[in-house]
Length: 209
Image (tube, rainbow, N blue to C red):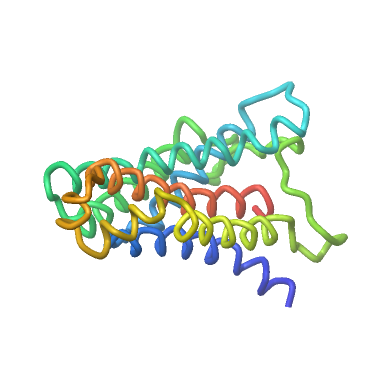
């Protein structure tokens, strides 16, 4: 049962990310690549940044993943908003770029010593604590995912920006006529969507792998 909860965490977070895109009528098919990018950035912040106390390092590592994945998702978002390039095609293509980038980094600049393509171990100050002794691997990321589900609901249905997201998704022309910046809304929505997918990779890396 605990392993089912552990495995559910990246699905919850990536699902929330994709759901935000759907509300803006954007089909984010790049969740897997964004998860990879978030995990890579988190791993780098986790092993390369030394000398920080846990209360700074622990949030810094996932924040790196959130920012990296957000930038990764902003690219197809702005291409869709400014030039009409279909986000399904762009996010699928960026998935493959993320996969190959991961192959390159884990076989080169970010590779640990030895023949296995892995990064150096993340420092203990960046670990996401488990709730029970080993071998139970359930970690605090499960509750982070549940909390973010509430935050996403609040964002979409209780804030002005959430209303703008849903208006653009429901009727793009009406939203533009109402004074909403469609370009800004689409680009930011894709960035937020990708950030949650990147956080899925970050939390799984820090809490499990």
